[in-house]
Length: 130
Image (tube, rainbow, N blue to C red; front, side, top):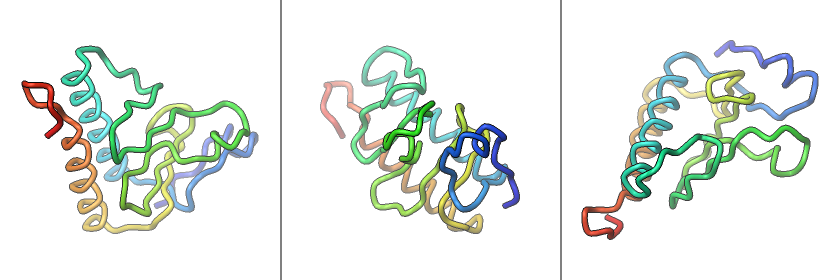
């Protein structure tokens, strides 16, 4: 994975993962964010703007922070039980990086587990969590 950090990340010292993400991993992350949006809508009947924590069990989501506080050092996306952390610069996909170097098979397992975690947060038609 050869993606280079954004100039803002280099100039302002924003933390990045050890490895850039390739287009395959970027596509998986984008799909995961779209699935969070879908489940968020079904549960709340309002759009998730990707700038607030969707407050889903097992999902750690943080928007990009423009300062060097401790909050700004945390990953933007992480799932319960996974050592993989995703970070980006200002918006998902931009200067995106991760903490683990994985092949496509490992990314696929991470993706499948992430979808299960997200979907467990979806309420059924009676308002109970599945």
